[in-house]
Length: 343
Image (cartoon, rainbow, N blue to C red; front, side, top):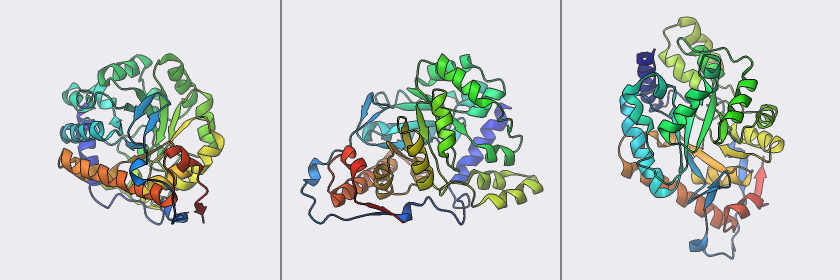
């Protein structure tokens, strides 16, 4: 089983470096959001503050997050090292890929152990929520937190991916009580994320009621994991069926608005097809606390720390320029701006 996980993770990396894994006929919805330019901002660009905090505790330099991507494969070790070093320097939150492999195979355990490269930023460990139905215990979740030295754990939801994936885990029944038990037993914050099809308001509310402290909506408009698994699959029926889901999911904008309406007292991460700092400004203006980038930074992560840093600096500059263009000097002001139109 562990060898299969290693192989799958390696294939995921290679496929996500291509454009074949994007959803079709669906976007994040960010093109429907317009920010109204302020020609006289009455602020000093150099005084714009993009500082943020994670779950109101840990202060960080930006509202940005490297969304969960990889771990548990040989190439993942280098990728995560590059990302962690860069995230530490720029003050980004770093979310690890699924840590199931961390428990099931010690060979690539170091690919998840990034704390030595990122001693001060928030690090989020990650596990498929469905694994709670397949024998994954609370003690093993605690072991993940100890081995990664992470500040929080996020449980990912990936129903359609698991169906298309070879030997996927598809029993998602009665997960809410198990998630609640985990939230009760863990001393660290537990969050939930989708993998690219979005979370609706009702689901977000249910999760908040069982103790989930943050929600990464991961809306549609970016990577489609049914497309990823279709490209891996040797099953002709699943390959053909997956094609019907190229436009599946809740666009990031719609997911963000729905979740914000239902759970305004939980930290919300907007991810899914986020490409620029202007997208980030739009998401924050709509109510997001943090904004996640994943595949748009993966290519650079395979190259070097310097390549990752350059992308990060561009995203940060784009956000500050958008804030300057709106006349807001802080993220708090950005969240309150009325210079936004949703068409």
